[in-house]
Image 1: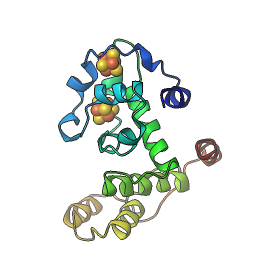
Image 2 (image 1 turned 60 degrees about the vertical axis):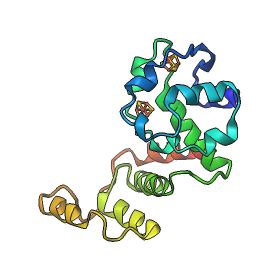
Image 3 (image 1 turned 180 degrees about the horizontal axis):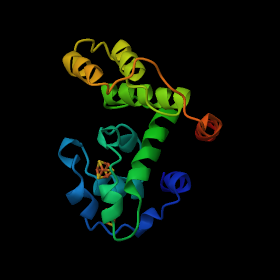
Length: 170
Ligand code: SF4
Ligand code: SF4
């Protein structure tokens, strides 16, 4: 497990000496089943099943606070991302089902347009999750203020986006 995550992220995970700086700074730690430092320890011990079924990897918002706080320059946010990839690749059932559905709708929008098209992304998420009525008023208010566009726009660098996705999938 440690070799695979090191290969995916280029991190020297063994350098972690469990100072807990990542966990104490994480704004989402209270919603996680295992705080970031424990996730790193579980990688040391090769606890693949527990890691890939944990809610933590889906609760992590990739804010990179942990990464900037780590005295050993371990990019924990990148490691969380790699664990999400491994979870999907290895066919584990993502622990936070709706977080995963939102994540896939987000990635699908990036893959199609190189940026997020909020209306399309939310439509896809709601269709898959069945959460049709949550946040409808908020969405309408955002639309009225011009924060949500009706139609998507592709970015100029779509060739690069396609290359990145190809690299990730392979
Ligand atoms: S901040 Fe770095 S060294 Fe400290 S516990 Fe977290 S990963 Fe390990
Ligand atoms: S990147 Fe994830 S684990 Fe790190 S501080 Fe942010 S939410 Fe917590």
